[in-house]
Image 1 (cartoon, rainbow, N blue to C red):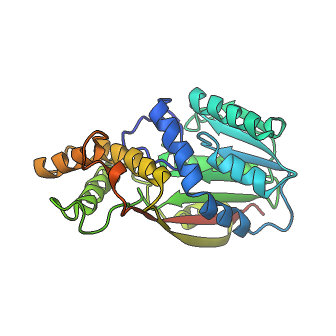
Image 2 (tube, helix red, strand yellow):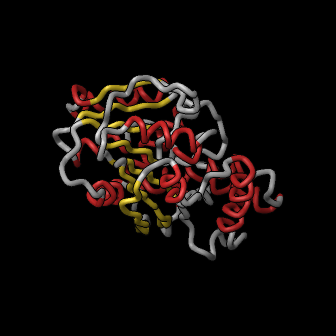
Length: 286
C-alpha cells in the first residue's frame, strides 16, 4: 500500500513510514498485546496446522511471529510495502532463529496485480484490510490465492487503545475521549473501512464465514515502563490525526503528556492501562 496517513494505528500490519518511531510502536504493540494475539491464533478454526501462510501488511512481524509460534511446521511469506519494516522483520527472524521459515516480499497491496505468493493454506491480515484502497478487490484476490479449504483471518483493532483514567489529566478531565472523538471524525473521512463489519464483504467475495470473535483487552499498566512508552507512541499518532479538531486547551494538555521532560509526561504516570478490543473474522474458501 502506498498511503501515508498520520493516524496510523500501531498494531503493526500496514506499511506506512519507515521511521524509527513507527518501527518502535509496532514492536511495542507486539510485546504488549502478545497474549491476546496468541488467543486469536489459538482460536482460528483449523483442522490441521497450515504449512504455507501469507501475512498481508506484516509490518515488523507481530502476526508473522505469532503464527510461527502457533504453527511450528509452517513457513510464512510476510508481505509489506515498507522496506524498513521488512528489514526489521528479517532481523527479528534471525535473532529468533526462524529466518529459514520466513520469506519477505515487498509489494503494494493496492496494486491490481499482486506478486506470486504461492497457494497458502492460511492468509492473515491484521490491521491492514481497512487501509486498502480497493478492499473488495483485495478480498477477491485473497479468495483466489488460497488453497481450496484454506482460511482467511481478518483481524482489526477497535481504533486506538485508551490508556488514561476518565478523570485524567487533572487539568483537562476526559481529554482522551475528546481525542478519540476527533480521530474518529478524521478516520471517517480518510479511512472509511476502519471499523467495518468484514463478514458481509467476505461473503460477497465468495468466502464462507466460519467464525467471528471479539476479544477485549484490558491490561494493567501501572508498573509497566513498556506500556508507558506504548501510550506515548500511540498518543503521538493520535495527535497527528486529532490536532486540527482539538481546542487549544486540549492540545496544550495533550502536548504536556507528550513532553517527556515535563512533570506531566505520560511516562511519569502510574495509573495507566491498555483498553481496547480486537475483532477477528475467519473465512474459508470452499
